[in-house]
Image (cartoon, helix red, strand yellow):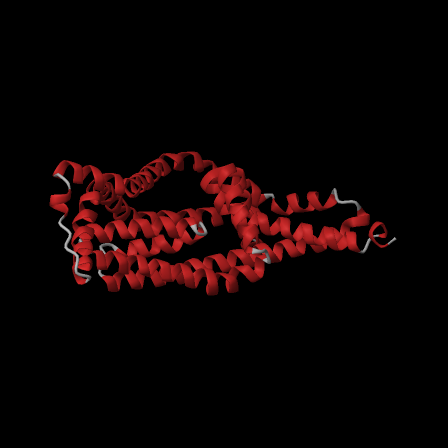
Length: 325
Protein backbone atom coordinates (compact mmCIF):
# COMPACT_ATOMS: atom_id res chain seq x y z
CA UNK A 1 0.00 0.00 0.00
CA UNK A 2 2.83 2.54 0.62
CA UNK A 3 3.80 2.10 -3.04
CA UNK A 4 0.26 2.87 -4.22
CA UNK A 5 -0.05 6.02 -2.11
CA UNK A 6 3.55 6.99 -2.85
CA UNK A 7 2.78 6.83 -6.57
CA UNK A 8 -0.41 8.88 -6.10
CA UNK A 9 1.51 11.46 -4.05
CA UNK A 10 4.17 11.76 -6.77
CA UNK A 11 1.48 12.16 -9.43
CA UNK A 12 -0.19 14.95 -7.45
CA UNK A 13 2.90 16.95 -6.54
CA UNK A 14 5.14 16.42 -9.56
CA UNK A 15 3.86 19.68 -11.17
CA UNK A 16 4.91 21.57 -8.03
CA UNK A 17 8.43 20.07 -8.16
CA UNK A 18 8.63 20.98 -11.85
CA UNK A 19 7.69 24.55 -10.91
CA UNK A 20 10.52 24.64 -8.35
CA UNK A 21 12.92 23.41 -11.03
CA UNK A 22 12.24 26.60 -12.98
CA UNK A 23 13.82 28.49 -10.05
CA UNK A 24 17.01 26.39 -10.39
CA UNK A 25 16.06 24.12 -7.48
CA UNK A 26 17.15 20.55 -8.13
CA UNK A 27 14.52 17.85 -8.28
CA UNK A 28 16.02 16.11 -5.23
CA UNK A 29 15.86 19.27 -3.11
CA UNK A 30 12.43 20.17 -4.47
CA UNK A 31 11.04 16.69 -3.74
CA UNK A 32 12.43 16.83 -0.19
CA UNK A 33 10.92 20.29 0.36
CA UNK A 34 7.49 19.26 -0.93
CA UNK A 35 7.35 16.11 1.20
CA UNK A 36 8.58 18.01 4.27
CA UNK A 37 5.95 20.69 3.71
CA UNK A 38 3.11 18.18 3.32
CA UNK A 39 4.26 16.24 6.41
CA UNK A 40 4.45 19.48 8.41
CA UNK A 41 0.92 20.41 7.33
CA UNK A 42 -0.30 16.91 8.24
CA UNK A 43 1.34 17.13 11.69
CA UNK A 44 -0.19 20.57 12.34
CA UNK A 45 -3.66 19.30 11.43
CA UNK A 46 -3.13 16.19 13.56
CA UNK A 47 -1.92 18.19 16.58
CA UNK A 48 -4.88 20.53 16.22
CA UNK A 49 -7.53 17.82 15.89
CA UNK A 50 -6.01 14.92 17.87
CA UNK A 51 -7.00 16.11 21.39
CA UNK A 52 -10.63 16.49 20.32
CA UNK A 53 -10.52 13.16 18.48
CA UNK A 54 -9.22 11.39 21.61
CA UNK A 55 -12.00 12.94 23.70
CA UNK A 56 -14.57 11.92 21.09
CA UNK A 57 -13.20 8.36 20.97
CA UNK A 58 -13.43 8.03 24.76
CA UNK A 59 -16.92 9.50 24.89
CA UNK A 60 -17.94 7.23 22.03
CA UNK A 61 -16.85 4.14 23.96
CA UNK A 62 -18.98 5.29 26.91
CA UNK A 63 -21.92 6.03 24.63
CA UNK A 64 -21.89 2.49 23.24
CA UNK A 65 -22.38 1.11 26.76
CA UNK A 66 -25.15 3.55 27.66
CA UNK A 67 -26.89 3.69 24.28
CA UNK A 68 -29.48 0.91 24.85
CA UNK A 69 -30.69 2.54 28.10
CA UNK A 70 -30.60 6.04 26.60
CA UNK A 71 -32.61 5.00 23.55
CA UNK A 72 -35.06 3.04 25.70
CA UNK A 73 -35.70 6.12 27.85
CA UNK A 74 -36.32 8.18 24.71
CA UNK A 75 -38.30 5.74 22.59
CA UNK A 76 -40.74 4.28 25.14
CA UNK A 77 -42.27 7.64 26.23
CA UNK A 78 -42.52 8.67 22.57
CA UNK A 79 -44.34 5.44 21.63
CA UNK A 80 -46.65 5.75 24.65
CA UNK A 81 -47.48 9.38 23.76
CA UNK A 82 -48.19 8.49 20.14
CA UNK A 83 -50.41 5.57 21.20
CA UNK A 84 -52.42 7.76 23.60
CA UNK A 85 -53.24 10.17 20.75
CA UNK A 86 -55.04 7.28 19.03
CA UNK A 87 -56.84 6.21 22.21
CA UNK A 88 -54.49 3.40 23.22
CA UNK A 89 -52.78 3.13 26.55
CA UNK A 90 -49.52 1.24 26.68
CA UNK A 91 -47.82 0.38 29.94
CA UNK A 92 -44.49 -1.23 29.24
CA UNK A 93 -43.80 -1.83 32.92
CA UNK A 94 -46.80 -4.16 33.13
CA UNK A 95 -45.98 -5.88 29.85
CA UNK A 96 -42.64 -7.20 30.99
CA UNK A 97 -40.46 -7.39 34.05
CA UNK A 98 -37.44 -5.15 34.37
CA UNK A 99 -35.14 -8.02 33.50
CA UNK A 100 -37.14 -8.98 30.44
CA UNK A 101 -37.45 -5.34 29.38
CA UNK A 102 -33.71 -4.84 29.65
CA UNK A 103 -33.09 -8.04 27.70
CA UNK A 104 -35.58 -7.05 25.01
CA UNK A 105 -34.27 -3.51 24.55
CA UNK A 106 -30.69 -4.73 24.53
CA UNK A 107 -31.49 -7.09 21.67
CA UNK A 108 -33.32 -4.32 19.77
CA UNK A 109 -30.36 -1.93 19.95
CA UNK A 110 -27.66 -4.57 19.88
CA UNK A 111 -26.64 -3.82 16.30
CA UNK A 112 -26.31 -0.10 17.03
CA UNK A 113 -24.01 -0.78 19.96
CA UNK A 114 -21.97 -3.29 17.98
CA UNK A 115 -21.63 -0.81 15.14
CA UNK A 116 -20.39 1.99 17.37
CA UNK A 117 -18.01 -0.36 19.18
CA UNK A 118 -16.62 -1.48 15.84
CA UNK A 119 -16.06 2.13 14.77
CA UNK A 120 -14.17 2.84 18.00
CA UNK A 121 -12.01 -0.27 17.62
CA UNK A 122 -11.32 0.66 14.01
CA UNK A 123 -10.05 4.04 15.17
CA UNK A 124 -7.73 2.40 17.70
CA UNK A 125 -6.40 -0.01 15.06
CA UNK A 126 -5.89 2.90 12.70
CA UNK A 127 -3.39 4.46 15.11
CA UNK A 128 -1.31 1.27 15.17
CA UNK A 129 -1.49 1.06 11.37
CA UNK A 130 0.07 4.52 11.00
CA UNK A 131 3.47 2.99 11.78
CA UNK A 132 3.18 0.90 8.59
CA UNK A 133 2.40 4.02 6.58
CA UNK A 134 5.65 5.67 7.63
CA UNK A 135 7.16 4.03 4.54
CA UNK A 136 4.89 6.12 2.31
CA UNK A 137 6.92 9.39 2.50
CA UNK A 138 10.13 7.49 1.68
CA UNK A 139 8.56 5.74 -1.30
CA UNK A 140 6.90 9.01 -2.38
CA UNK A 141 10.27 10.80 -2.31
CA UNK A 142 11.88 8.36 -4.74
CA UNK A 143 8.83 8.37 -7.01
CA UNK A 144 8.78 12.17 -6.97
CA UNK A 145 12.53 12.56 -7.54
CA UNK A 146 12.55 10.15 -10.49
CA UNK A 147 9.10 11.00 -11.89
CA UNK A 148 10.42 12.41 -15.17
CA UNK A 149 12.66 9.38 -15.64
CA UNK A 150 9.79 6.98 -14.86
CA UNK A 151 7.43 8.65 -17.34
CA UNK A 152 10.08 8.81 -20.08
CA UNK A 153 11.04 5.15 -19.67
CA UNK A 154 7.38 4.12 -19.62
CA UNK A 155 6.62 5.99 -22.84
CA UNK A 156 9.75 4.60 -24.46
CA UNK A 157 8.51 0.99 -24.28
CA UNK A 158 5.35 1.89 -26.25
CA UNK A 159 5.71 0.79 -29.92
CA UNK A 160 6.03 3.79 -32.25
CA UNK A 161 3.02 2.54 -34.20
CA UNK A 162 0.76 3.08 -31.17
CA UNK A 163 2.57 6.04 -29.61
CA UNK A 164 0.10 8.75 -30.67
CA UNK A 165 -2.85 6.58 -29.69
CA UNK A 166 -1.36 5.79 -26.26
CA UNK A 167 -0.48 9.46 -25.70
CA UNK A 168 -4.14 10.29 -26.29
CA UNK A 169 -5.22 7.68 -23.73
CA UNK A 170 -2.70 8.99 -21.18
CA UNK A 171 -3.92 12.57 -21.69
CA UNK A 172 -7.52 11.46 -21.09
CA UNK A 173 -6.49 9.52 -17.98
CA UNK A 174 -4.64 12.57 -16.68
CA UNK A 175 -7.70 14.73 -17.36
CA UNK A 176 -9.99 12.28 -15.52
CA UNK A 177 -7.69 11.93 -12.51
CA UNK A 178 -6.96 15.64 -12.13
CA UNK A 179 -10.65 16.45 -12.48
CA UNK A 180 -11.57 13.77 -9.94
CA UNK A 181 -9.00 14.97 -7.40
CA UNK A 182 -10.03 18.63 -7.69
CA UNK A 183 -13.70 17.66 -7.51
CA UNK A 184 -13.19 15.37 -4.53
CA UNK A 185 -11.33 18.00 -2.49
CA UNK A 186 -13.96 20.61 -3.37
CA UNK A 187 -16.71 18.18 -2.35
CA UNK A 188 -15.01 17.39 0.98
CA UNK A 189 -14.61 21.11 1.72
CA UNK A 190 -18.24 21.94 0.87
CA UNK A 191 -19.63 19.08 2.96
CA UNK A 192 -17.28 19.85 5.88
CA UNK A 193 -18.57 23.44 5.92
CA UNK A 194 -22.19 22.23 5.76
CA UNK A 195 -21.86 19.64 8.54
CA UNK A 196 -19.80 21.95 10.77
CA UNK A 197 -22.30 24.82 10.53
CA UNK A 198 -25.31 22.49 10.92
CA UNK A 199 -23.90 20.68 13.98
CA UNK A 200 -22.75 23.93 15.62
CA UNK A 201 -26.23 25.43 15.18
CA UNK A 202 -27.67 22.21 16.62
CA UNK A 203 -25.38 22.62 19.65
CA UNK A 204 -23.70 19.21 19.40
CA UNK A 205 -20.53 18.79 21.46
CA UNK A 206 -17.40 19.24 19.31
CA UNK A 207 -19.64 19.94 16.34
CA UNK A 208 -16.81 21.64 14.44
CA UNK A 209 -14.49 18.64 14.76
CA UNK A 210 -17.26 16.20 13.90
CA UNK A 211 -18.24 18.35 10.91
CA UNK A 212 -14.67 18.32 9.58
CA UNK A 213 -14.49 14.55 10.06
CA UNK A 214 -17.84 14.14 8.30
CA UNK A 215 -16.55 16.21 5.38
CA UNK A 216 -13.38 14.13 5.15
CA UNK A 217 -15.48 10.95 5.32
CA UNK A 218 -16.94 11.90 1.94
CA UNK A 219 -13.74 10.32 0.55
CA UNK A 220 -15.53 7.03 1.31
CA UNK A 221 -18.68 7.31 -0.83
CA UNK A 222 -21.86 6.12 0.95
CA UNK A 223 -19.82 4.32 3.64
CA UNK A 224 -18.31 7.52 5.06
CA UNK A 225 -21.66 9.26 5.35
CA UNK A 226 -23.16 6.26 7.16
CA UNK A 227 -20.32 6.03 9.68
CA UNK A 228 -20.23 9.76 10.46
CA UNK A 229 -24.05 9.85 10.76
CA UNK A 230 -23.98 6.92 13.20
CA UNK A 231 -21.37 8.68 15.35
CA UNK A 232 -23.30 11.98 15.33
CA UNK A 233 -26.59 10.26 16.20
CA UNK A 234 -24.92 8.40 19.08
CA UNK A 235 -23.44 11.63 20.47
CA UNK A 236 -26.78 13.43 20.06
CA UNK A 237 -28.59 10.64 21.93
CA UNK A 238 -26.14 10.81 24.84
CA UNK A 239 -26.06 14.61 24.96
CA UNK A 240 -29.70 15.60 24.46
CA UNK A 241 -31.52 12.42 25.56
CA UNK A 242 -34.28 13.49 23.21
CA UNK A 243 -35.65 11.47 20.31
CA UNK A 244 -36.56 14.68 18.47
CA UNK A 245 -32.94 15.88 18.57
CA UNK A 246 -31.72 12.45 17.45
CA UNK A 247 -34.10 12.55 14.48
CA UNK A 248 -33.04 16.12 13.63
CA UNK A 249 -29.37 15.06 13.70
CA UNK A 250 -30.15 12.08 11.49
CA UNK A 251 -32.16 14.34 9.19
CA UNK A 252 -29.18 16.68 8.76
CA UNK A 253 -27.08 13.78 7.50
CA UNK A 254 -29.84 12.34 5.30
CA UNK A 255 -30.37 15.77 3.73
CA UNK A 256 -26.61 16.28 3.31
CA UNK A 257 -26.17 12.87 1.69
CA UNK A 258 -29.14 13.46 -0.63
CA UNK A 259 -27.85 16.86 -1.79
CA UNK A 260 -24.30 15.53 -2.15
CA UNK A 261 -25.27 12.42 -4.12
CA UNK A 262 -27.85 14.01 -6.41
CA UNK A 263 -26.55 17.52 -7.04
CA UNK A 264 -23.01 18.33 -5.83
CA UNK A 265 -21.08 15.09 -6.50
CA UNK A 266 -22.48 14.54 -10.03
CA UNK A 267 -21.46 18.09 -10.96
CA UNK A 268 -18.00 18.05 -9.36
CA UNK A 269 -17.02 14.39 -9.87
CA UNK A 270 -19.53 12.50 -12.01
CA UNK A 271 -18.93 14.64 -15.10
CA UNK A 272 -15.18 13.99 -14.78
CA UNK A 273 -15.31 10.22 -14.20
CA UNK A 274 -18.09 9.58 -16.76
CA UNK A 275 -19.16 6.30 -15.19
CA UNK A 276 -22.62 4.89 -14.56
CA UNK A 277 -23.54 4.95 -10.82
CA UNK A 278 -24.02 1.17 -10.98
CA UNK A 279 -20.37 0.73 -11.99
CA UNK A 280 -19.29 3.12 -9.23
CA UNK A 281 -21.09 0.99 -6.63
CA UNK A 282 -19.52 -2.15 -8.11
CA UNK A 283 -16.07 -0.50 -7.95
CA UNK A 284 -16.60 0.44 -4.29
CA UNK A 285 -17.67 -3.10 -3.35
CA UNK A 286 -14.80 -4.69 -5.28
CA UNK A 287 -12.25 -2.27 -3.81
CA UNK A 288 -13.54 -2.84 -0.29
CA UNK A 289 -13.46 -6.63 -0.62
CA UNK A 290 -9.97 -6.69 -2.14
CA UNK A 291 -8.17 -3.99 -0.13
CA UNK A 292 -10.47 -2.85 2.66
CA UNK A 293 -10.58 0.86 3.51
CA UNK A 294 -7.72 1.74 1.16
CA UNK A 295 -9.48 -0.11 -1.65
CA UNK A 296 -12.63 1.95 -1.17
CA UNK A 297 -10.62 5.18 -1.37
CA UNK A 298 -8.81 4.32 -4.61
CA UNK A 299 -11.61 2.31 -6.25
CA UNK A 300 -13.28 5.23 -8.05
CA UNK A 301 -10.07 6.66 -9.61
CA UNK A 302 -9.11 3.17 -10.77
CA UNK A 303 -12.61 2.68 -12.19
CA UNK A 304 -12.22 6.02 -13.99
CA UNK A 305 -8.90 4.90 -15.52
CA UNK A 306 -10.40 1.59 -16.63
CA UNK A 307 -13.35 3.49 -18.10
CA UNK A 308 -11.01 5.65 -20.21
CA UNK A 309 -9.04 2.62 -21.43
CA UNK A 310 -12.18 0.63 -22.28
CA UNK A 311 -13.75 3.56 -24.15
CA UNK A 312 -10.61 4.01 -26.26
CA UNK A 313 -10.30 0.28 -26.95
CA UNK A 314 -13.93 0.12 -28.07
CA UNK A 315 -13.44 3.18 -30.25
CA UNK A 316 -10.34 1.58 -31.79
CA UNK A 317 -12.25 -1.67 -32.36
CA UNK A 318 -15.21 0.09 -34.00
CA UNK A 319 -12.81 1.77 -36.46
CA UNK A 320 -10.84 -1.41 -37.15
CA UNK A 321 -11.09 -3.63 -40.23
CA UNK A 322 -12.18 -6.56 -38.06
CA UNK A 323 -15.39 -4.70 -37.16
CA UNK A 324 -16.06 -3.03 -40.53
CA UNK A 325 -15.35 -5.89 -42.94
